[in-house]
Amino acid sequence: MGPNLLINYGEAVAMLLFGIGFGNLLLQPNLIKKIIGLNIMDTAVYLFLAEKGYIAGRVAPIITGGVQDVEAYINPIPSGLVLTGIVVSVSVSALMLALTIRLYRRYHTLDLDEISRQLKKEGL
Image (tube, rainbow, N blue to C red; front, top):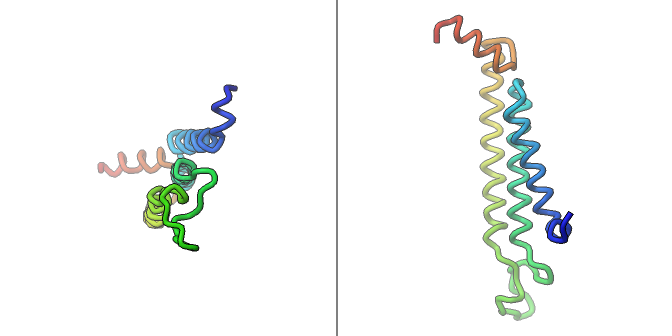
């Protein structure tokens, strides 16, 4: 391991989590497990953005004590992106779960391969 990996362990963990989520998304036939994989990928991206937005020795950009120097604060844009991403992620997860419930009620399985076979039988 190089010295940069030890310094940037947060980014390395984010990339590892993203790989786990992506592998889960690609390799699992179960729809619930695919949704979990996508959520792991989302979390990895949020961790990566939070790591990139943090600067050691600086504080959140809330002006207190009259300090208005830009060098005293972290960049607020990654934090805003993470908060917006979390809201969107929850909405997408809720929609995916609702569609998964509808698929289960119609096909009585969560296996994507089995759903595909049943669709071919129906001629769709």
